[in-house]
Amino acid sequence: MAGPDYDSEIKQLTATMHTIEQVLDLDQMERDIADLGEQVAAPDLWDDQANATRVTGRLSGLQGQVDRFRALHQRIDDLAILAELAAEEADEETKAEADAELEKVKKAVEGLEVRTLLSGEYDEREALVSIRAGAGGVDAADFAETLMRMYVRWAEQNNYPVEVFETSYAEEAGLKSATFAIHAPYAYGTLSVESGTHRLVRISPFDNQGRRQTSFAAVEVVPVLEQTDEIDVPDEEIRVDVYRSGGPGGQSVNTTDSAVRLTHIPTGTVVSCQNEKSQLQNKASAMVVLKAKLLARKKAEEKAHLDGLRGDVQASWGDQMRNYVLNPYQIVKDLRTGFESGNPSSVFDGDIDGFLEAGIRWRRGSENAESN
Image 1 (tube, rainbow, N blue to C red):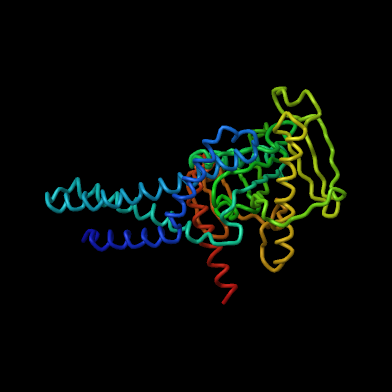
Image 2: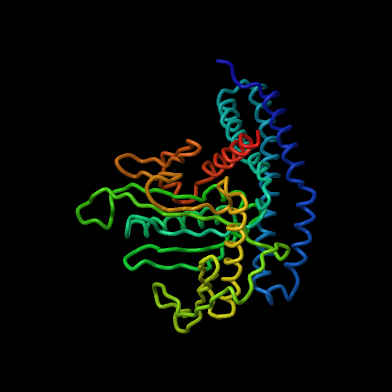
């Protein structure tokens, strides 16, 4: 069986990388990194913690993307040398190494190419992720906490800062709900395909009879807003409630009524924040989340015939978008794209890039089909 035509393969990979470089506009990214680096070096940066988090998060995200591109370009150059060496020495071991590296590089380039498909109005924004336990009792709450860890681990593996706004713990185990931000460019565009109902099937660790349990959790992803976004929320439309933060361990935040709950009266939208010790800080953070959710609601209403940015996630039977099955067999399968993994443990540990890439391609295909 003939091996790969390395000259042709490497030429194609190089051409794809050139296209990606143009779409990403690496020169502009480098300029943005230099500008953000100057802001980070400013001695008064942390006087405004919200802005400091945004600036450092964007710098980390941009630098990570540039480093990923440069490293992949270097791998293609190294692959050409390795293939040439294998051909000159007729060494089967070196050839096998080159063949394996070619497949890895092709997969990495395909993954990077997906980034060029993120051209939606808010795709370049950072992401606000909300997770809510659905049907399934304590198993659903435990599943919601597992999903939160999955997304946090994914962010950590990509060096994306995570800021937790609110965690509401269930009585026995897990989470009733949680809201957190992932501070990285294009985090919204990347993670927005995760919005929907996630379904878990397993032998329940909370059932003393060892029965199989099906549980659900809803994931909602909305873009973080910037000051230029027009979303006005009059004070008279907001009800503010303060309360004592709840959570395991008796943290210092639990000693005062510092947690804040905001209710947008016209829509009934409710958000909470309890991460900070200061009531003012929690109110400011909660307002960030509220405005993001109201913008998502507005866009969904404007495009009611589409899924919109937010969608109506019921977290119950009949509307799930991904199944996580741990018994009687092990598989994680996306019902929209067909992408699957036979290693749920790895997925729960943050290995979700394959699902994200498949979801982005699926979404672009759906958008193209609707426009034709």
